[in-house]
Length: 400
Picture 1: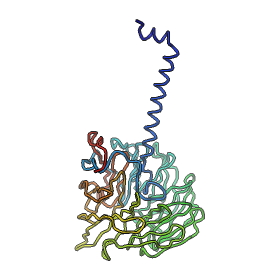
Picture 2 (picture 1 turned 180 degrees about the vertical axis):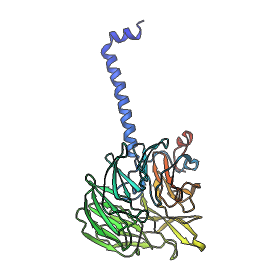
Picture 3 (picture 1 turned 45 degrees about the horizontal axis):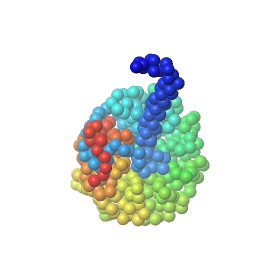
Picture 4 (picture 1 turned 120 degrees about the vertical axis):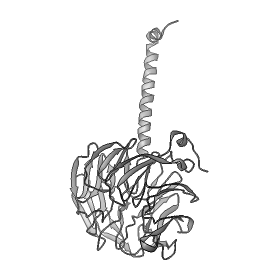
């Protein structure tokens, strides 16, 4: 019987072929893992420039196992309220800091404060007090800062990135377009008498953003295409554009034709005292939005609503003990939202059943869901939390 060395001597070509096959399989597996990770990225406030806060690539957390969600790690990051982390290729960007997604290890920090990072082509763009600033993802090196200066956290507008341009709202009441390579301002347009706290959505060459009205601008020139006042004034709701329809909140929730601004429907799901002013998430023909009803001594109660995207009809409603300023997120059959008392909720996206509630990990900022982990910011302490499930729970698949 020949040993392995002898066998390889006599069948060298076969051995070399086998080795190459193994190498190719390993190489392919590594790249498949990288591609899967990239698909799971949550690269800006709305996930994609058109908004919607829906991650269609999440495959780990689901309505069956999310009830076992727990804190994996936490870190101080000094973010402002209303922010949302970005997660790209194993790194979490929050405030103007970068953390290892698996462990929470701090990779770099600029200590300049910031709102809802957006990441593209190895650069992270963050709205700061110095305007929109670009940092290299490798070490946090500042590349440039441009556009209107901000007075954070008065204008918590995360950038939307499309076709080499970053769009964001500023505390001086404008929406600005910035060249992502040079930092040069390409155009700006007034949208509010006070500040612009809405993150823009960009789709089909049009920028949509809330201010004193809902506005639509030509993405290249900044020319005003249409506006609507139905949502009320000084809105912070960030629009979502799905299937040629713009969804946004304010004093009502409404759907608009993306091309003409015509109102397709508008509803007050909780009645005239309920304020659905946060940003909607849109997934699988459903619009998810939170609403708050003011109470005594500055208190409020909230409800998360699921509405039919075509008609605005209520599918389900889920009451919570505190107001909702956070914008919901949807991934793999689960709708997530933070409440003003610091609780992170997970609801069945189809039925509204309460699947999980974790206290002390949320607030006015909006949760991000990527690769089996929910990243959430607290409002008061500026602490970033990563929540997930163990290996046994993660293996459980299917939706009840």
